[in-house]
Image 1 (cartoon, helix red, strand yellow):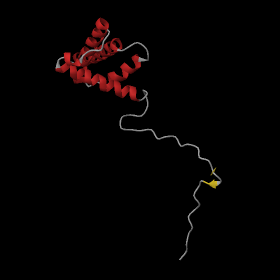
Image 2 (cartoon, rainbow, N blue to C red):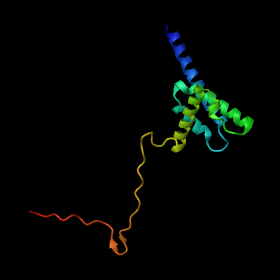
Image 3 (spheres, rainbow, N blue to C red):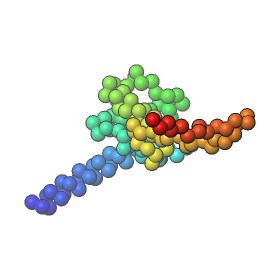
Image 4 (cartoon, rainbow, N blue to C red):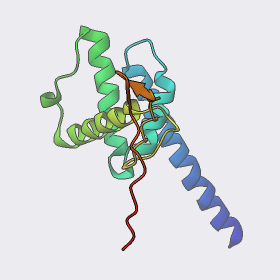
Amino acid sequence: MKVVSVGVLLLAFATTAHAADDFIDACVRSAPSGGDMAATCACMSTKIPADVRADATEALRRSAKVMTDTSKSIDPSTLPPNLMKGLQAAVVAQADCMQRPIGSVGAGQTLKELPQPQDEVAFGFFTWNADPTISST
């Protein structure tokens, strides 16, 4: 019984890894040359929902074929609805991965701006506020 469970678990892991590799391969092939698309595609792979991964992979493959055959971008209206949804998921993932460097803050987080140095004196006036006066009653 344990052998069967381990076998099924390994098969599921191998299938998931293979699907991720298929997506990354299709992504790299559909991308224009230049830049670090392997890293971008790896980032995108983590953001594609499992239920549209196969459709996203196929949409990217078709996009690569159209680019190779005609040197033009694919017209999304020529895709069936399921592949349109997959292509949309890939575009959203790509935008998210290209918006910020890989390894930076996560979604919904922002970096604080670095404080800028301030002059102590500007136009002959001090630029800091004096301590408030304390009145005793």
